[in-house]
Image (cartoon, rainbow, N blue to C red; front, side):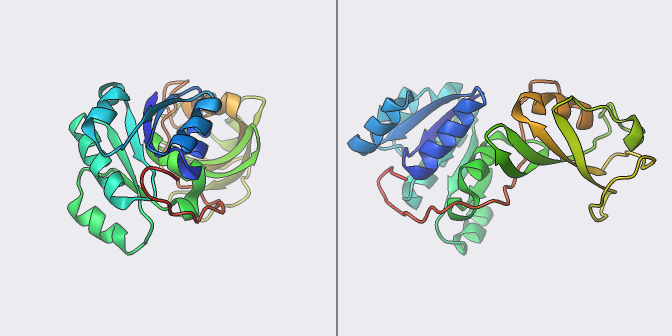
Length: 244
C-alpha cells in the first residue's frame, strides 16, 4: 500500500518507519528543513513544504495514495490536508491534540475517516488507523512479535471448527478465546469457533497475513487492519508548521 504522511516529526517519522518495515511505500511532507533532512537521512522520500497545500500533496502523488495521515501538531494543517486527500479518494487520518475536539470533527468532518491522539496511541496506533480493516493489535512484544485480537467472520476458513482443529503457522499461537460479546478466557480444546468469536494470537510479523487469512478470511498478504493500540508512547510535543 502507499501512504502520504504530513509531518516528519516524532509521530510522523515513527509511523513512517513502522509502515516501511511492513513493506509499504511512504512519502512524507515536511516544512522544517532540519526535520526533513533527518527523514531523508533515514531513506524516506520527503517533499518540502506545507502539507496543507494541494500542490505539495500532488508532488507527493496523493492521487496514487491509499491513505493520507495528517500527523503534524498543527490542527488546521491537518484538517486542510484531510479535506484535499478526501477529494482524491484517499482514506484520511487526522491527528488532534485535545480530546474535546474529537466530537466536533466527527460531527462536521465527514472527510475524516479516523481521528487519533498520538500522545495516547503512538506510531502503532497511527499506522493502524491508516490501514483500516478487521484486526485489533494489542501490543508489540518484540521487534518481530505482536499480539493481535482477530474476530472470526462468515468467510473465515475456520468458521465451524473447534479450537483443537485450528492449525496456525508454526510462529503463531492462541493466547485467549472469547465468544461473541463474552469475556476472553483461556481456550479449551472443544470450544467451537463461530462468526463473531474472538481469538487473541501471538504471532511473528512474517506470518500475520497467514493468520489473518485463516481466522478472518482475508486474502493472504493483505495488510489492512483495524487496530486500536492499547500501548502508549511518550510523545507530548505539539510543534506546529508540519513538524511532529
